[in-house]
Length: 422
Image (tube, rainbow, N blue to C red):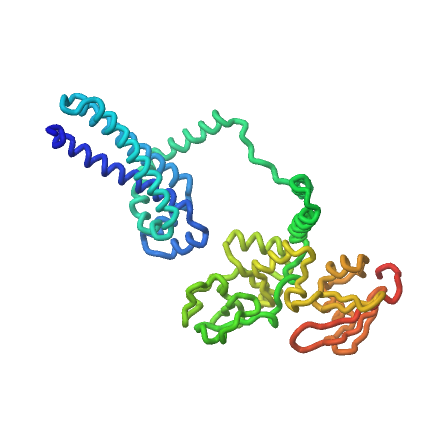
């Protein structure tokens, strides 16, 4: 075919353009499919990795540049396809059939090699590809800075003209969600469970973290450097390896052991992620919001002196939401927090929240500054509780059955008279 040497430069240019279009498609898929934790690791990498992380700080600018260059490359590509197709039509030895076949093959090539395949690879290998793409993407984005205000203005005007009445959807009320659940299924048991989950989600804004946290006696901490032998082949009570600061007992970072598939033998602290710090008086909803915002799974609860008095894990919050009647003492003690001993008598764990006790007894409890039964005992006695201590609290009489130095207090609660709360 005499025309092939003449068309060879055009074919090389087409292959180059397909590669450029594939690069922009893969970069778009790779960068925008990164999870928050992957972005943090990207920001701590080399120069190219840091450039890629910086580009993601302004996603509108990055996406506009990627789409613009991809469009320019595709337009040039199809312009060359038209030139080659016209040249083939003029060649007597080729004819119209070959020209049409070339155009169809060119279209399939750019669809597969510059859209489908690159985007699939970009999503599957996003962490490996995002870093090396940082420098060339930064150059491409920087080259568009002079016309970027114009592109954003065109984008804004198009939204105002095409969707002038577009408004964000208002927040749903809990009653709307409950109504949707009741209409979506005829299974009464399932409806009850889902409504309970919704109720527990709302209660997150009422439950304080000091009611739900694991106190210091219920979790283990390790000072760096941490080796696998220190675990003695056992899972920690919280499911997390909690690492303290080198010079104090304050929790600094954590490792979710169930997610650590390739467990190293030494220097486990290198695989840990920092914890967040929340005050003891914050609500569980506040802690959850901060954990989601910073992509953390463990919150260290600090008291008024800035000391770590407990931890709250993501699994603890899930237990609050999805257990029909969640209880921190059941989570810590692996037993029910309240047992019926007879008419008007109950065995209660000291860490049982007063709110939980009130719901269980269906009674209004006397006012108290404390949030747990154990706190009420300390308040009424005015000292540290000891076995066989007895005190009155409104219509109740409370007797300390067990008060171990380590562990949880057990209290016998007796309804002496059914008067009003005092």
